[in-house]
Every structure is written in C-alpha cells, then in structure tokens.
Image 1 (cartoon, rainbow, N blue to C red):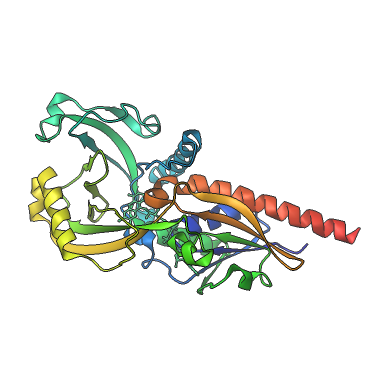
Image 2 (image 1 turned 90 degrees about the horizontal axis):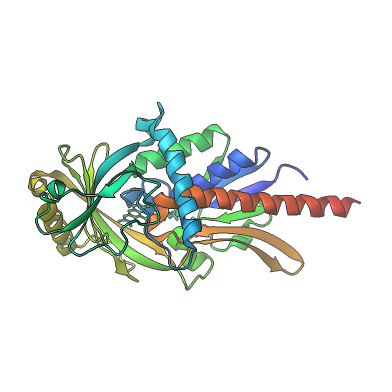
Length: 341
Ligand code: FAD
C-alpha cells in the first residue's frame, strides 16, 4: 500500500493537535487538514484556554484524568522551553472560590495541577463574599497564538492545509484512506449527531496588565483569566443557543460580575467581545466507525464534543485518536496484503 492518506476535518484545537499527533506517530502517513474556517475564526479562538477540566458525565473519571494529565505534561514542557512565548503557553497561579463548601475538596485533577491547596484565611480576605477556596497553579494557552503555532508545526512537517467545507464525509472517500472528524459543533450537521448541542459562551478580552492571578467562581460561572497580552473575562453558558451575535446585556453583566471579584478591572481598557459555541455532549465522541456504501468501506475516527474542556483535554484525546488512526491503517495494510496473496 502507498503512503496512507489521512484527512483531518477541522482546524480548531482538536483538529490541529490530532493532525500533529498523527504525524508524530505515523511518519509514513500523508496528512491533510480540511476546514471551512481556520484561526482566527474558530470556536477555539474564542476560548479562554485555561487548563482546568470540566467533567464529562459519560466518561470514566480515570480516562478524563489521563487525558488531562497528558495535556498538562505536554504543555508544561512547552511552557518550559524557548517556544513558550510564540506558542502562547504560560503558567498562571490563582484561586477558585466558593460561597458554600465545594462539592469536592480534592477534584480528580488536583494532583495534576501544581501546588493545589485550600486557601488560607488571609487569602480569603480578598474575597469578602466567599468563605472557601482552593489555590493552585495551572497552564493557560493564549488561543490564537497557540493555534498558529500548531499550524506552523504542521506545515513544517509537510501537512497540507485546505480551506474546504465538507458536506458529507463520503465525498472524501476517493481521495483519502482514513478520515478524522474533528468538526466540533459542525459535527451536528456533518454526521447528524443529535447528542451534540451548542452551549453558547461570550467573553470579554480586555487590556488590564496589572491583573496577574486567575480568579474563578467554583461553578465556573464567573472567571478572570490573565493571558500574556489580554485578560479574558467570562462567562455565560447558554444551552441550545446557536446565536453568534454578542449580547450587550450579557457584556455588561459579565463585566459587573468580574469587577465585583476584582474591583481594579473598572480601569480595564480596549474591551473586545467574542462569542463561541461549545461543542457539548455527555461524553467526547472518540471512536472509530466504518462507514459502508455498497461494497466500499471508509474508516472514520471521530474526535469531537469536547464542550467546555477542549483545551484542557486536547493532547490526551488527540493521542488516542492518533492511536485509532494507526489501527485503521494497520487494518487497511493487512487487507491490501491479503488481496495480493
Ligand atoms: P472548533 O474550534 O469549533 O473547530 C472546529 C473546526 O471544524 C473548525 O475549523 C471548523 O471550520 C471545522 N468544521 C466544522 N464543520 C465543518 C465542515 N462541515 N467542513 C469543514 N470544516 C468544518 N476549553 C478549555 O479547555 N478551557 C477554557 O478556558 C475554555 N474556555 C472557553 C470559553 C468560551 C467562551 C468557549 C466558547 C469555549 C471555551 N472552551 C474552553 C471550550 C473550547 O473552546 C472547545 O472545547 C474547543 O475549542 C473545541 O475545539 P474543536 O477543535 O473541537 O472545535
């Protein structure tokens, strides 16, 4: 069999990182990324990019922990390299605060992030409306620079990037041996997945370089995440809302909520509003499906539905998707060998 041809549909954080893991594990593969939108026009560009997991009710916790640990380990290595500023990856310390006792004293990810501990009484004095809190250091991706860095690495290994809307995965079968579906919320239409739904988010990206620590309400409803150049203020979670238009009332509400946690944000400047649709599901769809039409088979590896946690989990799920692609290629090579005997 000639070099296996793999098409990755999607150029958000999931598509790009999956393409990279495929190249890293299958040097003989020819990989193409196909997407109707690239950075800066994907949901991934809107995200805050914090590595704080959200829980998927339909996925075993030990699996989620492994995905998070792999992501954290790989990004920690980048943050500790000369590439860190170009890749937009950095460590950030801060607080997750609660008005009532947190559901879990030790979330599953507490021994993956650095220095997780209960906040001291002195620290809690900064937040007079909150009585409980957890302090830790985690990683943050500045999303558009990170996506561009991934694209640059892919191009350097010879991966092709094509702007193309895919209406049906079957249209790719004559050109590619294996398809990887990383279409995010686009999978709702592309593969008709009714279990996938949007959770609309809106964030403000502001200039407030004096804010150095992250602050997050324990339920994730309000957050302040400082990046290398801009601070991301959020948030909102609106299930089944497909609107990509910013809502001025939500902008004011987010700003007021963030200022009540960090009053110095009243002096923030250059406020930019962004909206994105989180591709949400009970669990990430990470599995192989063999499509059949007549006698023709088309192996598809699905990797979508990361909801609020695409950045927190992306390297872990990309590695698993690359492993599944490897299995598909081994099966194709086996059947091509058998047909020659
Ligand atoms: P996308 O980024 O949407 O990429 C999908 C790609 O598929 C695009 O390139 C699109 O053009 C392409 N595509 C779709 N359909 C087709 C088609 N038919 N043909 C061709 N191409 C197609 N996660 C975290 O871990 N930490 C955070 O702090 C965080 N903050 C967030 C804040 C907000 C406001 C939002 C909205 C999300 C946040 N998230 C966060 C979640 C994160 O953004 C998502 O989980 C992640 O971006 C999903 O990535 P993706 O690559 O699957 O989807």
